[in-house]
Image (tube, rainbow, N blue to C red):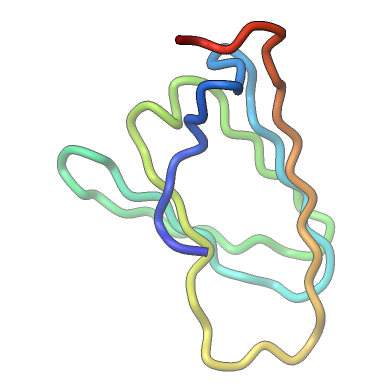
Length: 87
């Protein structure tokens, strides 16, 4: 998945976004929106990534593209949806 921020108007900006990974290890990267600083972590089988606010405001993130991934991978991402989206 390419660079993006989870900043859709339906999402609660005060709630964390939680991602759970199962299967193959994959690199996950953050890139600062202003100075373009990058940081990379490895999402291992069973790992949980929690992105607390204001992560989405200042950082983009991406699942780093790999040439070959043999084992399967499943990711579950949990987001809080607001009753009345921001306008």
